[in-house]
Amino acid sequence: MHCYKIFNELQNFKIKILHNIHKQFRCCVNCGIFQGVGPSLLCPRCEVKFLEMCYSPKRKIAGGLLVSSLFDWVENENRIGSILIKQIKNQCSEETIRFYCEKFLHKTGGPQSKSSTVIVPCPARSNKRQHALRIALAMGSILNCEVSDCLQFAKGGSQLGQKKLNKIDRTNIKMVCKVAVASKNIIFVDDILTTGATAWAARRALPEDCNFEVWCLAQRCRVATNE
Image (cartoon, rainbow, N blue to C red; front, side, top):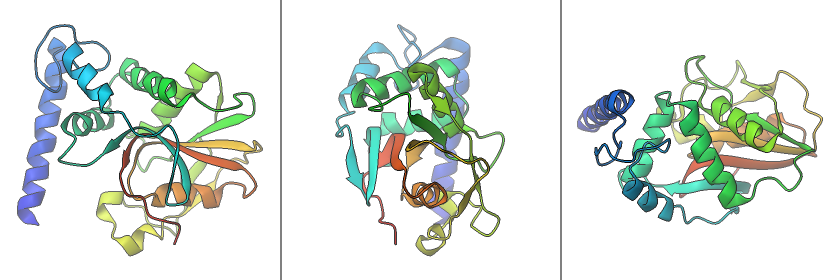
């Protein structure tokens, strides 16, 4: 376990170095070359390779949730996906967020009815790490949909990040609504869907009669049911 922690810290340090190099010199965050790197943070060759991997179905049921994702992700197997997730969590540019949101919407087709849809981001545990809100705002801007930052973690539930929780603690995640949401169509947005515990907490906090869907850029292959 200790060696695994050291390995993860080294990987995170490597990602931060690549992020800083990219900001200064605009090089590909995957292969490191300097030619043709755009908002994707990837060179044309790596960008094509990555987008070809975004083969998961438009919408699928995962643990009882209706989920749409840009790509399926398995840590230590999908190298480019892992790098991009780290980049998004390390405060990449709005241009990059918008690029991947546009790719997501091109793949999924977006909501059936924009006028009656509200996009709700996963609440942040820290003001410095508003990943889901940034994605939700980009989605809302592209679709011209309302974005409501209406959820917050409840004081009685776990406040730790998913990585620090065991299976039992994940079922104890609780959210409450700060502001009432009247829309019948609610899209819950997060950067990555891991176990589904956070999405289920949001579902329980929102109106029971709403149509609830989860949008994320990356999804782990296995999502737990609402146990």
